[in-house]
Amino acid sequence: MEVEKLSRKYDLDVTFSPYFLDPSTPPEGKPRRQMSNPDDPPSHLELRAEELGIRFTRGRTWTSNSHISLQAGEFVSEHYPELMDAFHKRMFKAYFDELADIGTVDAVVKLGAEAGLPEAELRTALEGETYRERVDEGIDWARQVGVSAVPTFILDEKYAVVGAQPVEVFEQVLEKLGKRPRES
Image (cartoon, rainbow, N blue to C red):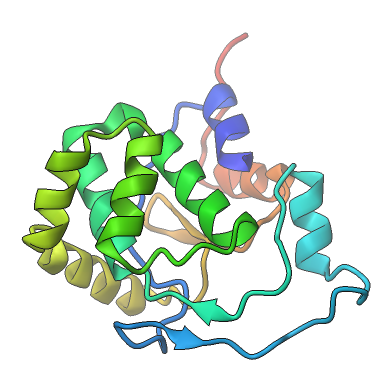
């Protein structure tokens, strides 16, 4: 959301780098312990998400390994970059709002198709693990530069903004980098 606002105001080149939602999750996924009760007050993260029009549904019982969805992201980036935003939004909504398991080829292909991707092409890439090595390299790079949470935004390979920060935080970093808003 904030990146979209910034992209309208600044000349930005936005790329997605793979990183696990939860690096401790085994390939098959894992049960998740209850972290909050339905009537608990909203957390800071939930309140921030709500401000941005994002819904986090409580009650997740399963944590998906996100490697397959990250491979799909690389497929989209290479073949259908114009669908990258739609793909990411669909995966995000499926996982955080609908509590879907995004750790299987079938689930990711279905969600990718809903975002406009060709099912057969995506399935072939995922079943053949075409992007596995690229994802692993991206995750290694992210660890090397200190990424430890999702989302983390790396600006000009100099500054990192961790978490769902207000647009003003990004603007302060862009100012430090000498970036100016576009002329209106």
